Image: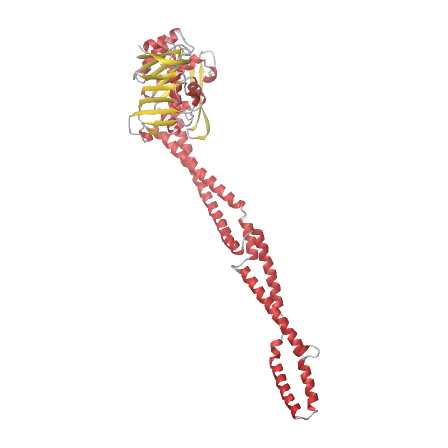
Length: 498
């Protein structure tokens, strides 16, 4: 129940405070006086947008506050009495509940626990969207609704999990781990192999330089033309023909040299294995360098990449196994979801038949004696509200076929239908009901019937009616008159006292 509302600097309203009766309140005034601004202000406080164009000309900001009583325990609020306040500024607006910051999202959520606004916008929403399902669900076993929501949540979570697994597998596949791993394994690099081969090649080149030097010595001493070994052997032949102590000494020295040359000759034997080794090294280095160019990484990084790629392939296989299990689980959850949806739909259809009878009765009281009404159920894909899509059919005359209510009913007929609906809901709806010109398109006995219905409805609910009708004004428990004047170059809407 809304106890009071205070509005400051909101369009043409400078400062208005309305303290409401717990039953029937009427807000009246000439067209353009500003009475509908009360409804705009209530809408604005729960709106997700901050419309700075609503700020009036009397100050730099606009403030709207509502004092109300409600049970908001399911949202974590243990109090029963609340004050919600919104300050609209050019820079940044502020929203609070009992002086604590409140998000726009939470405000939109709790709005349905506080107030129902029946305006042209609401009528359109009721007939076009799933709003009527919400009304119907007031009479459905809450356990059935919660069972469906739980089944839908589990189904969606599993479906989402499968999608995420598939997305993860796709990302792995896009990196082509099998192809890259094959490239690495074909070369099969070893840790630090490249540096070791470079060092080995350096050593072999050094050994080859030594070997070349030894080859030159070998030619000088043994193999080349005029080599020392052959020269000494030839010298012996000449020495043997000569007899002299001096020659004998030379012969002895040459003999020693010849013995040494014979002794060291094996050291000069050439080994061709090194030539083969360096060719293999050069070939291996080329393979490794080519691999590094392809990956733009060092060999050690490529070896680490090999391990990573193997991990990705193993992970992909694991993910595929998980998807298989999740899909089996999804099939089972879909069976549970379908069963929960069928239970929910069955209860809705059962309540819909009662709705049809009750609303027809109430419409007869509102001078729609010949009106016919029906609720048609269509099955759609699973949504958070079930598998039901509702179409409201209406005909104002017996001889005309029923068609979609929002397309065929006049403004007055829609207003009376909504009033008949709220009367049927009765105590199921404990929120404040705000009717914006509910009498639109009616008059005479029909208007009298609407006034009687509103009075009856106000016995169980708090009503706030924005109206032009004197008939409705007469049955209200409290009447607020809004007037406007032009002061100091500004139009001002104000509450007429008395």
